[in-house]
Image (cartoon, rainbow, N blue to C red):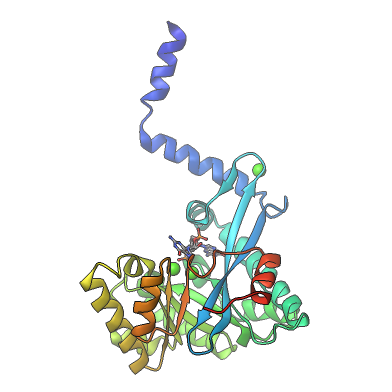
Length: 279
Ligand code: C2E
Ligand code: CA
Ligand code: CA
Ligand code: CA
């Protein structure tokens, strides 16, 4: 009787509390993820319609903890951002991506660009642009082959700081894009100030492109606005042929999504490029 009583208490544990303990569990294990070699980068191809080839890849973090198993970056990045681990983890990402790019260069991939996600926390780091340039140059990688993705939400949180940091990154030679575009109500004036070269149309607009007239209108407007401001566009989360045809018709420059390729290990990425990667 006692045992079942205890179980029922567990069963009715408030959701808040279990979320907190999950957070602490992730936090405790994440501390050792780098030292235990539990982090990995996967690379998702970005296909250019004009060039009819893969022009870039987005580096995406994967974490396989010995006890907790695979944990999605959507779950552990927020934890890392709140406890400060995001700084060493992000440095690990830039370091690993640069090393990989240098290796691919030596294997003949001469003009591939790697897109790397920047966190809001990094954005508040002083001397961020110099710090990143130092990591990249350690591997003999040209900053011009790295593109940093900053979410529209982060850019809008503090537009003055964002535009300053972006100008500095640009000055170091890095490319810049705005991630999850369309979810944060950017104004045209901010976009001009941000000196970004590319907008990543958020996957929520791509999802219902075939059936939603308003999503089609939004996507078409984003592409036209970007082009009139001299920016390129990439659509993320492209999963169907219909979405691809609509996007190509609107003049979207690049696509990324499961239809073309899932994120791949470094080895599989190289194989993917070597085999038939034409659409
Ligand atoms: P994100 O930057 O918006 O990345 C796109 C997400 O969409 C990735 O999820 C990718 O695997 C997924 N995706 C790609 N194609 C498709 C598709 O066709 N359909 C659908 N439904 N999803 C697709 P992932 O890898 O789980 O990453 C989730 C988020 O975690 C990323 O969203 C990004 O915000 C964050 N993240 C991942 N790696 C890093 C990193 O190295 N640093 C930072 N700061 N954040 C990262
Ligand atoms: Ca562990
Ligand atoms: Ca991204
Ligand atoms: Ca995104």
